[in-house]
Length: 167
View 1 (cartoon, rainbow, N blue to C red):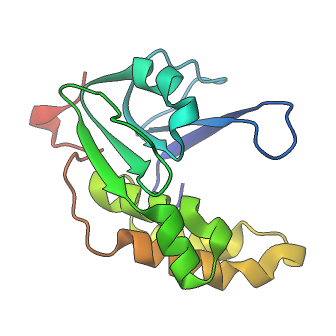
View 2: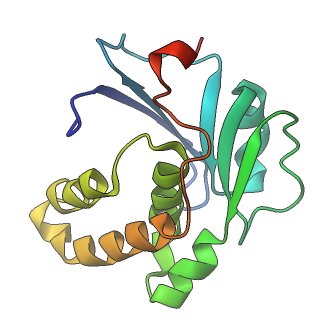
């Protein structure tokens, strides 16, 4: 939203306390986005664990990209025709002293690999979205975003030129 795009988030959470899957669909567009977003296929994904990967893999279309947390993801993601970016997100989060920051590291890498949003916008949002009683986590989240973003460049752009527009 900070970059002038329309954004809709739709999350699904299993009823299992700590350990159930979380599936969040984020739809970003240049124009109005229908709600709730029904996404039969996608060009990109971020997968933190292999256990919940099969449902996501089925929706990933050829030519897409997936960022996986190679610290915990077991096996081969098995996606012919897609770019797989392995990020040791959970291990790097532990190294930063922010054990729960693996998803922020993966998000930073995802942003770098796809160019879907700038690091500056992610950093600003990390400060703004937390409620006051959680604001103490902002700097650790920002450090994790920066750590994930570092060392990656755009491989599968989210916003290709008009001549190469995604179908």
